[in-house]
Length: 169
Image (cartoon, rainbow, N blue to C red):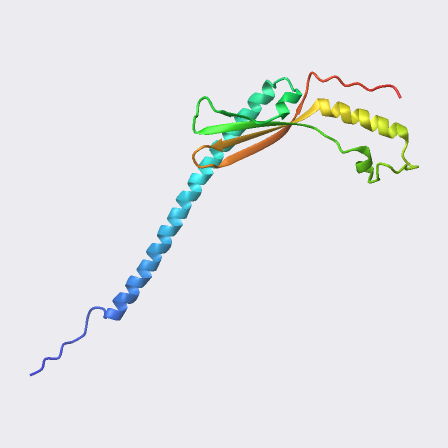
C-alpha cells in the first residue's frame, strides 16, 4: 500500500528559493546604501573640518596681515597647524596685475591708434602701478596629510602701507 501524503501546508522549494533571493537582494541593497551613507558622512565631516581650519587661518591673516613685499610671492609658505598635526596649510601671495593698455584695447603695440590719447596711456600706467602695490591676492589651502583632501579659499588684501601717487601729466 502506498500512502498518499497530503500537501496541505508548507512552502515548496521554489517558493523558498525565490523568497531567499528577494531577501538577499534587499540585504545587499541596504548594506550598500548604508556604506555609501557612512562614506559620504565621513567626507562631509572632513570637508567641514578643512573649511573651518581654512576660514580660521584666513581670518587670522586678515586681522594681522604681514608686510606685503615681493618676497612673499616667491614661493608658497607651507606649515603645519600648531594644534592639529594632521593638517597643513599653504599661503600663496600674488600681486594684482592689470593687462597692458594695448592688450586691453585690442590693438597691436606698434600701431598708432588715432583714437587713443597719450594721456590715457600715461594715466592707465599710473593706475596699473598703484594697483600693483595696493592690492594683493591671498590663497589659503588646507590639506589633510593622511587623506590628501584639501580646501582652498582666496581673497583680496589691501596693502595699508602702500602709497598711492599720481604724477602730473
